[in-house]
Image (cartoon, rainbow, N blue to C red; front, side):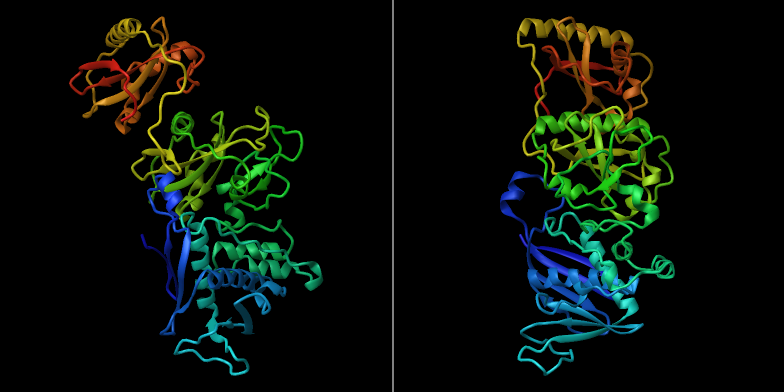
Length: 476
């Protein structure tokens, strides 16, 4: 299937066309198909009738040159990466303070562009004003923010060494307020050796926004590239007041195993929801859905998050994510542990949505040993019905069935429960389940009891007041 991605600004549009990796698409269920094989790239610039076109090599060279030149322009420190004629198809030259020459070394020259006649393969030369340049930078930023397009493509910017010129505080003050894309602000800081060289996927927030994408207490291998967003690890013996050193989530996920087992993902999905849902106390005021990518350890610890859309990066303060990251003082640092990824959406309606980042490869199953004796299961079914029926009273305010999976031990004591539909999440306090669970474990978000065999049932609370309890037959 042919896939297109379009990143549009008033003076620049990037259009990417390609295909999805068939083997990957068959393994994972993506809500949005991944463009993993680039076939054609087109760059449309205002004032020019013909786009600049090319393949994968052209596109990679373009984004490297754009980011390198943005670093140079913001910092006023020469950056050789923007002018590499030996190995790059694309380079930039500064004409004056408001003119920037984009040079594409190509075998063919489309009509409508001026070119030099000094070589057998004349390059395309396009003069951009500063507004056009900034729009091009922002289009590149949008591409790097899109995790479903060429996800393996990352941009490694090298810090400009001090021998190319000392950056004064005046230059720093000049660079920071520039109205450019978030990646450009990042490279400006790199030029002054203020931060380590980042792996630029996704685009980096401004200094005021750096906390919106951090991941605490991850210790990737020494070879992992650092970045001022996405992940963090304690610098020594962790303490409650220790400030973490920031690491990169993308780099971490490339070096540690990923949890993909559907049954384990299902269990972790619940733990993520149980941590975030009660902590999201202020659910009003969102103008757009805030979407995040979460990293979760095998024990359910939320080790980090990263904004997926621009609104999420700006609105992280309206979410509980900064407060639910695990405490390094109470848990060993994350190091080479498998990580599960989840998509978390804070909707404008005040509804929290949590789902595996890649979906479920197959139908998940309940984790843990089960009580198999049919007679015992039948007796436990009747006992669970009687217990819930006696404690469920009042007039329901919900208008749709609330469906739950409830597990009990051999004595009929509730050991675990989970909502199976959204309305069950929303109205769970109108059921006796949280009270029953809290009476045993002291918390409604405690880890389920999986130390002994359990019998599982589907419990349905109907708006009419009818209660149904039937043996569990798996997720629908």
